[in-house]
Image (cartoon, rainbow, N blue to C red; front, side, top):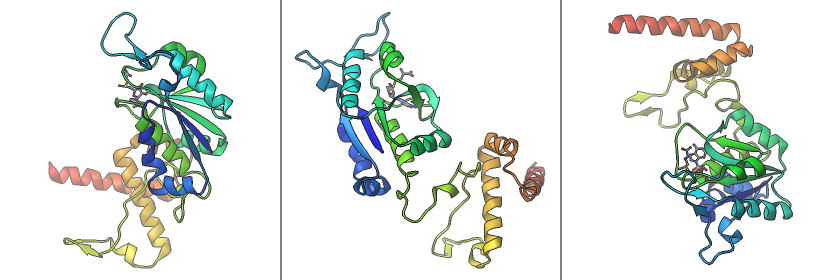
Length: 255
Ligand SMILES: C[S@@+](CC[C@H](N)C(=O)[O-])C[C@H]1O[C@@H](n2cnc3c(N)ncnc32)[C@H](O)[C@@H]1O
């Protein structure tokens, strides 16, 4: 899969081409990355990419023309089938969208904003989607673009060596449960006995229950969705009733 990033800080992307799973996948040729610096598409001596906002107010705004020229150049180079701009006000990036991008493959161009953001006329004419990676504001779109690329790359066939992305949080409609590794007892805390039992069915049932527990406590919205999608079994529902009773009993004894 091909990614093109339009960024004032191309060097930041070494974090994903040079480290970990994304690096391995990059070296295997599962994905490629080309950075396009809007400063290379300016025509003044100062290589200006930003200007003051019309209507006044603080900060600077990224100018449309250098960004549009960068998109035209990466398209001439064969990239940018779809163009995504990163912005806190965009549609939330979800597991489902990440999987769609990975399944679609081809090429994605990611436009990283800086300052107060990007001239709306560029967004309105050159961008297919505006995407947010969370309800918070960062200083630039680079980390957001890297989060998107990382999440998509790990879905590409062959990117993960021994783990299956199908068992991770969200894929099942639930959050992932807890994980443990050696030693068996760490600072007085033991690994749950069932994980040492060797009974695969019991272990699977425990993991499912722990996933339900994590989801009900951290993301009740996801649980409601999983129920509406028919992804909960009768056993899940009975585990959930039991968890609710245990929770109610615990708050009664705390009161
Ligand atoms: C300081 S932010 C601009 C914030 C903007 N004025 C606002 O209030 O929505 C600068 C750039 O960082 C990027 N950015 C910041 N937070 C982001 C987020 N949560 N998701 C995606 N991009 C983000 C965007 O590219 C944005 O143009």
